[in-house]
Length: 317
Image 1: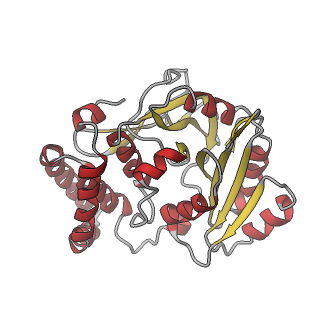
Image 2: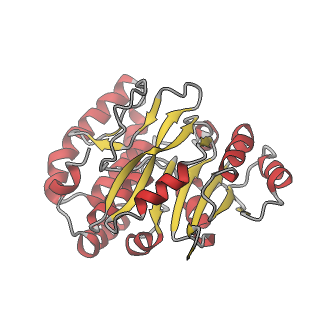
């Protein structure tokens, strides 16, 4: 949907017990200088009063709509529910523990609309508490199969201010074209939290689109702001389980044979070092139990989406 103000952008903000962040996040978003946007505030059955507060404080704003879930569905499904209510040509997934620069959306739209091959983009994420320090400027993939945040913890000296291609966008501030989502699918709802944005971006690359960093789009991110409330401590580590699923689904056979052994070895060694080997084994077992379903998704990705080789995708910075 377009008008003289530019394409409509849907901003999906997923909330779960985010009272600490709701006011600053929504205030900054609703003060965005780009005019043609809507906000879908999705609440994952919060119990801290944050939904009620947001309705009372911002409910009269015509740009803001509320979607209330009956349970905590996690990041992937929660955002997908918001996506189903979105009307925009572009969809931005924005964490509740963020504040945005007034021009953040203008810069995102400018870059997203400049090239039809761009499928997704990430804002430059700076830390909330030290706004001269980098939270993440995209994600890269190491030879050992781990996803690493570019620039994380570094002082921002404009060293990442080039608009470059990145392997994956961090889900805290990630924009995707609706037409691309219709081709590659939304977030995989088998991911409760962690690596769901990497899985989506890998599919976007395989379908022939690019993922880019937009360094002039600035978003401040608290980081892990609500993670302790949604990550059951007794569950297996989602990052390991989901990374393993992401490889099985999206990597070529050659890449799997190259990266999977060192990933398994390093992950197991890490579980021993942190005295959590049972969690590693349990997560591996869950992947094996669900392998048939994961393999079906792999077949769809490899046969229906793949237009680029892993060599082309994995050389991204």
